[in-house]
Image (cartoon, rainbow, N blue to C red; front, side, top):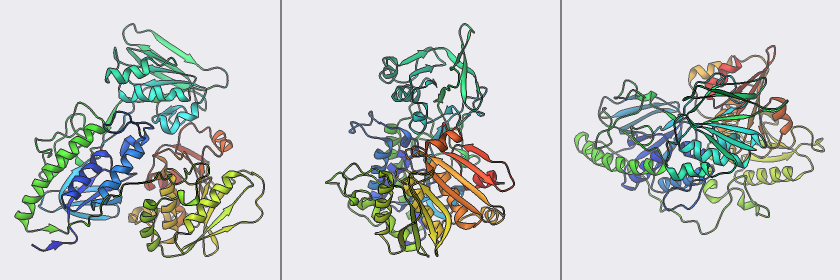
Length: 553
């Protein structure tokens, strides 16, 4: 049977541990597979600073663990695409997955979209999101250094993240709705035995309140009905972190296959949903335990069932996708720093490792216009770090050149920063600080969008960008460890790259405390929209391009 070049054996929707594991197994079995992820490969576990219960790994961050998973799958020929999946057509032998970057044809679909943090619904939760109410300890814990923090929830996340928050908070109180934690006793003991943690059982939040930020929380004992209010002192604030379970990301499957009353996906003994050729694995599924280990195990079993299904599909249809190119996995013999995290005394080559260089080259090759990285520097160590970082990035391609603007001096507000210019003129894109950590990828995407051809857009979004006629400033305040920030950054920069009336300036919150205080930022990402003739708008939380356009108005 001839190979089909424009056909995949499987499209995996979701790039968390389940999706990455399935991609590894399928590609290793010589099936052509592509993983589609709308945000950042790695999934929810990337916001966890320390994973200690994954077999064979003594300790690693969630990002480190899933980065390795992705490299393994890629080495066996798995393909990856950052795009939003907008719909499914699964009624025929050849399934169609509609994405924001075009359609993908395949013989089977694996849903591994996981679940996202669930809101509780107490009074003030939505109002104070980003101003005291948070959902990610890794992203937002540092904003509450020396403050009282309350944690809402009684599962794994509440116990683990509650203990983690003691690194910052003066004291942590965990409000557990049931009579005890619902997670494993060993996990609960981490919180129970911590001297800086109090646990109140049979307790639920009634409301949070305050002025510009949360300074008061009221909670109720569900047995006695007694309400208690904790108020911070004059001018003080408190943090309320919600870890109350997850809501399944199953919207794409509504009307496609059976879902249970909570939106989770039932599967049969072969891990297939009620729709033929549509499989599911990971936290999206009906299951008792949602952990990386269970997601990985289920995905391995699911991919084995998919192999049998795909072999039968080949025989039945005569369609055989082109087999992937296999590259032997490379085992690191030296320790390399991550982009933007080079340690003291590290050589310049440690800033961007060999694997990252390999991933950057196709992006640089597609760039249509050369760009100038214009540096605005002060006389400090951060400026020296930014200069070294941009010099090394530019050394990878002739399409990037570095220049230093004259007239900058001292440590003025906003310095240091890199300004992206095209044909000698600013594009409106700038990063204040050093774009390392999770912001490295969004910075590179900003370059790609500024140079062209850029990431494809829906016609509706493109038309909305073209209609912006008033001068508009987008200020994005981020944390380099935050996995929710890059989506907002990429969206803002993409809009600025396409419309000369728009600028997008990104600030590392740790480098610019005055900006953090000006907007009372207690959660990232924070997006400030300043449009000529309109009031300034401040918004918190993850947003895609369409949502940013709605805020611009």
